[in-house]
Image 1 (cartoon, one colour):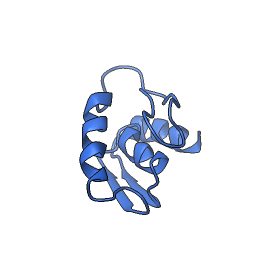
Image 2: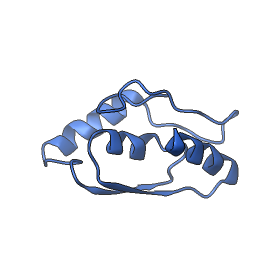
Image 3: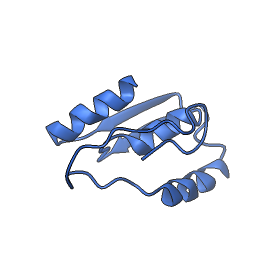
Image 4: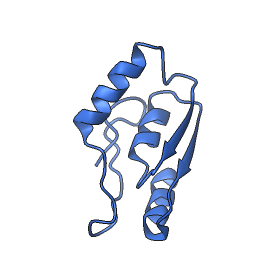
Length: 88
């Protein structure tokens, strides 16, 4: 798992062991942001990454210019990994 575009392009993200988190595929992220760019997003946007997992979507948004991201993750083990990725 990695950041696919923006300032942090290529940055690898830490993933928890096992199947406690199902990350979004790079091609799905790419498609989503392709649509968002048509609306001049995420530049300067405030983003909510609900069911954040390891933060792949929210961190991608920050890399592409989002101003602020709120991450929401219920699982404590996955949240610990999320925090490590944010710090990275």
